[in-house]
Image (cartoon, rainbow, N blue to C red; front, side, top):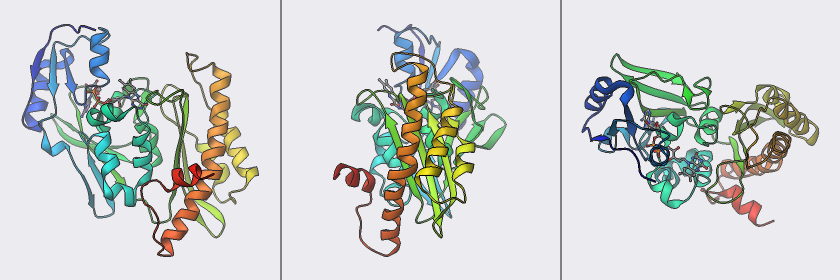
Length: 312
Ligand SMILES: Cc1cc2nc3c(=O)[nH]c(=O)nc-3n(C[C@H](O)[C@H](O)[C@H](O)COP(=O)(O)OP(=O)(O)OC[C@H]3O[C@@H](n4cnc5c(N)ncnc54)[C@H](O)[C@@H]3O)c2cc1C
């Protein structure tokens, strides 16, 4: 419960934060929402000498559209994602995903950039980011670099980010109108990390899947893209046979760890169920929703799938 003592810094600008990080190296930790770091410090799993609080950095906040991209500041909170009318309208998968992360209090503090940087395989944003084909902007002493989400997550708490770098922004192509989406998360209770979860984005053309991304949460050391499952669906009709095959292929790549959420066999079986569920029923509903929108009909924007599912 009691963290070890540390020195607190609250830089007012990104260059100042980078300089502090550079100066204190391994002995410093960035503090964002604090809902992963502080619990670890209270258990003394993390014992930094310096905390560099990013909350004064206004340039790391906000959600906007720039050309055909959506850009989200790393310090944008989960609740700000949920409340964003831009995301509700143009990228509802992110809204749906954020609503499934822990509880309202944590969502007031927890931020998207840190959920990504922390790289806990149980965190939900890594899979959502890969499904949405996102890019991450990383600032360091040498300047800025932009890296794709796909390939960024190397293992538990491990990413491509170098010491001394700060994630400043998340960029993603604005999903084309008519893109189907779903994040199916199986958890023991509200506020728990996923036993298994599956993010899907999908587009259809002439009755066949024209593009699809399937990414799994918490069934490996890091978010796991199910590329073979995607290949099985690409160009195929979205019927039970193809979806079952995609689910089988997704199950084949899972390497979950046994814990209180279940043993390895159980977790792999849940991936199959989630893929069938995301890959079939919910996506069909998402495509129907998108078709209604394309026809110009007024539909509830924020959670059409959940409303439809709840009605059954
Ligand atoms: C009980 C509980 C349940 C949870 N359930 C879920 C869940 O179901 N799904 C989910 O996705 N998350 C869940 N979380 C995690 C939560 O969303 C965290 O808030 C999030 O993982 C980390 O974000 P944070 O802003 O709190 O980061 P912090 O705790 O402040 O930081 C986390 C780590 O990221 C580093 N970091 C922070 N900012 C940056 C940056 N800009 N650039 C580089 N590195 C940075 C920090 O140094 C630290 O190592 C849960 C947390 C708790 C306590």
